[in-house]
Length: 99
Image 1 (cartoon, rainbow, N blue to C red):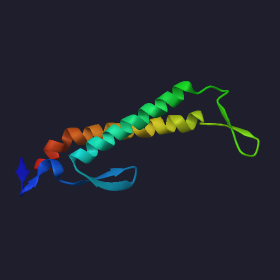
Image 2 (spheres, helix red, strand yellow):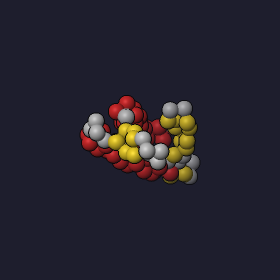
Image 3 (cartoon, rainbow, N blue to C red):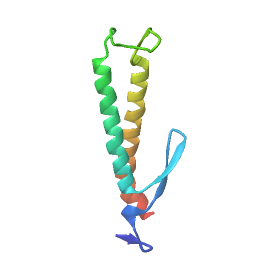
């Protein structure tokens, strides 16, 4: 389907992720969705494997935790929001493109 000679699927639209805007077409949104799902999956795997003894040595001889629970949970929340927004934008694409 074409609108004014441009393929609806390749029309760029403006979107905002947490204050940062970008332009994307439907294929871009699908790629972003796949990336964000992968990030979310990775953080879920990290979170499920966190133990209190999960430490990494620093160069100065002290040990720190690799990841804090709060950091990982924050990242999971962020990517879950991104996935939700991207799924919504993709579902609305045919309706928005026709406006």
